[in-house]
Length: 116
Length: 115
Image (cartoon, rainbow over all chains, first blue to last red; front, side):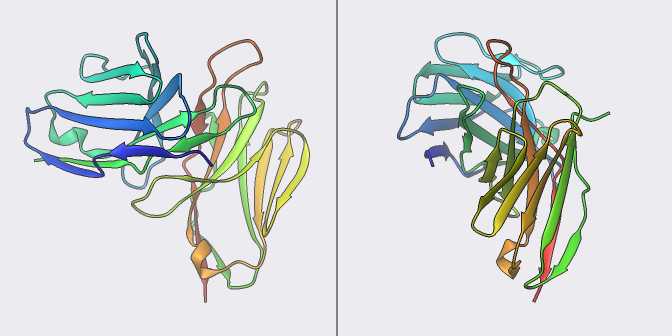
C-alpha cells in the first residue's frame, strides 16, 4: 500500500505552547488528507479534512482556530495545536488516499502528544 | 444512534479457531467498507476493503457485506496470538458525485487470541 509518514511520533510540550505535526505522502500525491484524534480506548474521531491549496473542512465541534491545518503541497499537510492544554493530550493520526469511493485510506504512524 | 457500531469486546478465541467480528452502520447510502487492525499505541493498518454484497476472501481473512441489513463482518480463520489487536470497522460516508469521501470509524472490537 501507499506510504504515509507522520512526524514526530511522540512529543511532550508545556501547556500554552504550540506543536506542529507533519504528514507526508511519500509515493503518491494527495490532494486530500485527513486528521484524526484518538483518546485512550476510544475510536478514531475525524477532526478535519485537509484540502491542498484551500481551507480545511472541520468536523462539528472542532475548533479551527485551535487546530490549524495547512496543506501547502500535494505531499504535505501540517496540523498545529495552538495554546495546547493537558486535555489536548491524545494520539493524532493523519491519513491520505481515498480520492474516490472505491479506494483506500492509508495512515501515518501517529503522533502521541502529551501536554504537561 | 452511532454511524458505525461495533461490540467493544473483548472477544476471546482459542488459537486456531475462527474469530467473527461484526459491524453495523446507519447510513443506507454508504458505498465502501473497510476493516483496519490497530495494535496498542500504533496507527491502523488496512486488512480488507469491500464494496459489493457478498464475501471477499484474502488469505485467512474474509469480509462479508450485506447492504440490505447494513451489516459488515470480518472472519479470521486459524486465529493466531499475533492477531490479537483492536479491529476497526470503517465506512466511507461519500457518495457518487456527491459529498467528499471520508471514513467514519466504529469504536473497534478488541480481539484476544489465547495460545
